Each structure stands twice: as structure tokens, then as C-alpha cells.
Image (cartoon, rainbow over all chains, first blue to last red; front, side, top):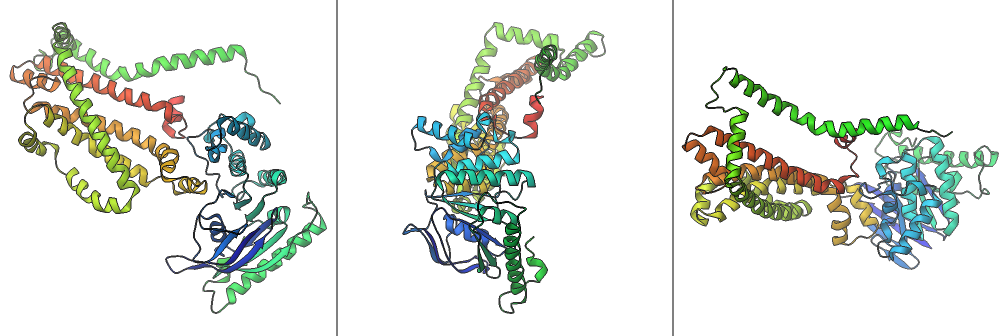
Length: 262
Length: 277
């Protein structure tokens, strides 16, 4: 169980990015976090990953406080961030240096097969397309078998077809070991395709505005009425969160237009 | 749908790439060989007496004579040994100080202003002090070359470490790399392309500084051949020494570039693509 206990983050310039966020995410659960630009989604994710230290509160995973990057927590960034001097196989095996060579090679080969890139193993990252590079990043994050996988808008730079393909791929990989997934996204469709629960955040400072359960059966049909209904619920919550942020006399100093999430 | 390459077309393309590989170095020889031939023809046609600027045939004969007597090898070896020693020291100190000032803001604030002030001093200004401190023999020469090599290496390494992509470093942090693992697995490979350029710049300055060093009272070395040629009025010897500097300098630069090339195959840069085609 991953628990966030009143997480707050104030930057050195005085900006309060996140304030008093508490939530619990169960094992194997997929949580999507959506919200307007600057509502603290990525800040929250970085606090969970241990890459940033929260100013207040704490992150607890299975009764262990997380204060730095942890072997049970993996992260996939918005860009693939592959190491250009390592081959595709080298990138996938980057987190496995402590393992015996044979075991490492086996794990890497399996991971590459799972993301359909076996024939690219010896290529350099510069030789991959954007979608292939992001698949390598997914394989790299999943191969050490983290208990929690954080995804920070991982498909936002990709075209619609590649994005849908990678969403399906991600669900397939998630089904192997069922880690907890926490996905930050601007794409409401993506949130509903993937998540068991959608958390809507509001800005200035970043707080949880609403939580919408999403218990549609998988695989989810993007054309179904149930999908459309869930989408409208999330969009309505987003609209309310944005208008609340825009009219809040104490906490909002920006115009409503500046906080448009799309 | 599958695509196949016609065998005849593939063979033609291989032949073309073989020719291109052969033609590439030849292309670089066109200008110097053309100039040399032009000058040779001009002297032979009586357009110049070639006394102060000897034609290639005279330079070649001087070269051959110096090689036959073993003088060329002796002087070239002495110069090469000085450059090698100075380069080694300059690279070692430049790499160390560049790396620590690039990595640590505190050390950069502490050391960089002093080193930048020292960099602004013309190299010739050091010569009297080095002779006083270290004597007229090898030590002062090697130290002068090391000073020349040090600054481009120091600046190159510091700049490269400072400009390593923060996002790539974050990948290392996310995988919980220790300090030494971060240096070995992220920082070193990331700075390698800039480091190789810094080494080549340093080596080039090493060859420039060895001339200044050998002007300060050397009894052997290619710089000595230059001074000797000037004092005895032998322009062919001067040009032969200059050509020797050019050939050996270019060869050492090629060795550094060739040694680094296998480690830089991953680079995604305009120059690398141009070299492939």
C-alpha cells in the first residue's frame, strides 16, 4: 500500500505547488491524476518517486517512509530519457547492474520481447522512433519489477495511434506483475482507458479536488456509452476545479484562461 | 510488404562506398599538393629564384638528407617526448581540476577565478620565470607545454560536466546510482565527446608551446632546427622542420581521434552523419 500523508511542497521562490495532499493507492491499482497546468501533478509524482523531497508530510510504501529514490519505485518520464551511449539492450538493463550477467541478459531479452523490440536490441537510441524509444523506457522501468510505477505524461509527445498502441501495451505489461501505477496525464481518454480511479487536482496550491472511480471492465471500449459517461464525469470535475481555482479570492491569482488544462 | 535490394545495385553501392573511402583522404591532399606543385613549377619556370621560399624538391632533398644522417629522427623524437610529457601532465591536471570545478559549485567559486586569471597570461610571459625556477633544461620546457595543454582541457572538462543534461542525471538518481557509479555510468560517457575535443585542442596547443619551449635554449628538437636554420640562413631546413611539425602534429591528432572514435559511435550529431555518407 502506498500512502501519501498531507504532502506539501513549497519551492524556494515561495510558490506553494502542492498543499496537504493525502491519499492511498492499493497494490495493483491504477490511479490517474489529471488537472490544469501548474496544479502540482508532476510535483506530487516527483515527491512519491523520492527525486524531490516534500516540504511537508511524508510518503509511505508498505510501512517504509520514502525519502529518496527507492528500488520498489520506478518512474517513466515524459521523454524517454534513454542514455544515448548505451544500446537499446544496455538501456533496458541499466537498472540491473547488480544482477549476474546471464540473468541480466535473460531479463533484458524477455523485456524486449514483451515490448516487441527484440530485433532492435543492438541499435542505438538515435535509431529509434519516438514510440519505440518510449517502449524501451517502459521496459527499462519495468524490468527491475518495481512495486510502484510512476508515469509522468509518458505518451503526451506521441501521435494518437502510437499513444493508443502504447496504452494497450502498458496494460499488457502491467498485467504481468500488477504493480501499482500512478499516471499523470492531460488526456482524459487516456485516464479512463487505463485507470481504476481518476483523481482531479486543482491549482494554487495543488490540492485534490475530486476522485472519480472508474470500474469499467477491461479492455475498455472508447466508443461505448459507459466510457463516454465516465469521460463526461471527469471533464465536469475538471471544469469545476478550474472555475473554482479562477474565482478563489485567496488562493488564485491567475485568470481562468491561464489554467485551461487542454 | 518486403523490400529487396538488387544484387547488382548492392554491388555498385559497395564499390561506390569503397571509392568514397579512398577519395576522402585524397580530397584533403588536393590543396597542399596543388600549392606545392604550383610553387615548384613557378621556380622551375624562373618566376622566382626560390631562395627564401625553397621549392618542394629542395625541401624534400633537405628532408632526405636530415633523415639520412639521423638528425631528423633525433630532433623529432626529442620534440615528441617533450610534447608527450607536457601533454600527459596538462591532461591529468586539467581533467582533475575541470572535473571537480564542474561538479562542485563551491570548488568552482574557489578555484575558477584564479585559473581564469592565469589563463589570461600570455605563454611567453612564463618563460623567464620557468627558467629561473626550473632551469634551462627539460623541466621548464615540459612545464611550459603542460601549461599550454592544461587550459583547453580544464575549460573543456569543466564546461562539459556543467552542461550534462540534468534529465539524464535524474535517470541515474531514479536508479539510485552511488556517487562513483553516477560518475562512471552517466557523467563520464556524457562528457566524452566534449572531452575528446578538449584533448585535441590541448594537443594542438601542446605543439604550439613546444616551439616556444624549444626556442628557450634547446640543443635538440624541431624547434631547435628552426632556430638553427634561421641563424645559418637555411630556409629549406626551416620549412622542412615546419613540415615535420605539421606531419607529426596531424598524426598525433589523428591518433587521439581514432582512439576515441569507437567510444563515440553512439553520437547523434550532424558531423557524424556527414562522415558516414
